[in-house]
Image 1 (cartoon, helix red, strand yellow):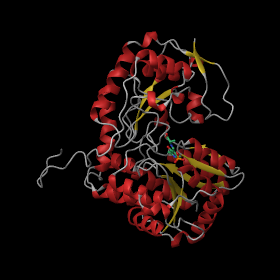
Image 2: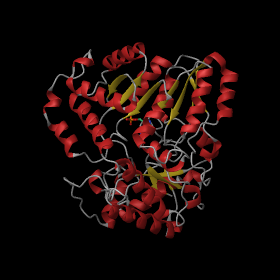
Image 3: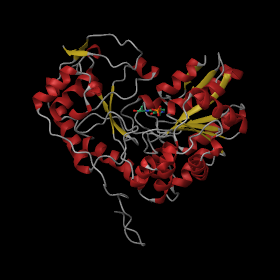
Amino acid sequence: MNDSSAGFVFSVPYEIAVVRPLRQTTLSEREDALKAAFYNTELIRQELIYIDLSTDSGVSSLSTGQLAAFTGASGLEPGMGLAAEGSRAFQSLKEQFHAIFGFPYVVATTQGRAAERIWSKLHVKPNGVVAGNMLFPSTRMHIEMNGAKVVDVISEAAHDLASAELFKGNVDLTKLEAVFREQGENVCCVYVELAVNSCGGHPVSLGNLKAVKVLAAAHQVPLFLDACRIFENSYLIKQREPGYQNRSIQEIVRETCDLADGLTMSALKDLLVPMGGLIGARDPASYQKAAMQGFLDGVQPPGSALEMMSVALREIFAAESAVACRVEQVNYLWRRLNGGVPLVQPPGGHAVFVDVKKFLPHVAPENHPAEALAAFLYHMSGIRVTRGPPAAPSQVQRGVELLRLAVPARKYVQGHVDDVAKAVLYTYAHREEIKGLKKTDKPGRSKYDPSYFAPV
Ligand code: F0G
């Protein structure tokens, strides 16, 4: 709790109302589970997991208000249909969305990637160029599927895992200027991801975003945001950027959005729901086209999903410490491990990232050190971690190997986090026992296809 002249501020703005019991597994059960999953922790059956840090997406605990929205009559009411405006749930979400993010128009989708697909289709042209700051793979792929090229303009610090730079998600303005100079009319948009997932959940500062906006506006190019972790980004701005300490999260969120011409957002992260994506638009034409495309693609969420997003938005901003509580839990895990284990510096908003090359210098890259580390950790503890998003092209070039400990918001208590710290520190102390894995099949579907492994 924080002391204040008005009394203490609650650290945790909720209590646990419903729980899912977990069964203690044995070492030999976990060995069998690993064999059955071809040593790929992504494939281990859910009931054999103790703590799941594979993602923070769509796995947060629901509030009693969200559960009521989910099981109540709203799911049975008319859904979005062709004219979303007719739906009561949509109206409620629209009001919340407008009040918090300031965009006059919103289109709801089933997931973030559906929002990106629609938005890219509208704003990315064949042979065009999009400047982005290490965009999430699905965003990049949707841009590429529309025939354009993504040029990465993230700061060099994003690739320096040991750098303590506080805003590693920032755009390198010199690189952005070069894109405008070299690509001219071909530049379709600048797409900035907040709290950049792939490099460590590192924030983008408002100072940087303002400078990006000035450059983009000078070239009459729109600035779009991937805002799925905008609350975490805003909290880190409040903590780290001079001049923002006395501003509320809501004010910072609004100032961030005011710089953008549009946004796409997966609601599965900061909005604490298992389904939902959002597009924020400023012009009616983009809104109408996006709404029509969502209708044609069949990615309109049911009324209950709209209600759950709208309840989440109301609740998050009703509790002073909601966002702080979430980010500080990630920060606590980072502090428990930092110094004992090689971590990406400094802490980010949604996950702790392990620098695998430093953790396992004796395991060659072709022996899949990240997956081998994850398999050892699971075997010892039942805790699941995975690599997280497939590496960005610039990370592949530099041979960066990360393992992501993604902390779902509002799901685990401090005892869980302490157990994670204990298990990861144990794994580091026993790292010589980790020999690596060999791949036994080739991914078929795509780079997202989970591979099969065997011990070397
Ligand atoms: N943008 C970012 C930054 C993301 O992290 C994700 C998903 C998406 C877009 C796509 O949203 O899943 O709703 O379609 N990230 C998840 C993760 C999968 O584990 O990091 P979605």
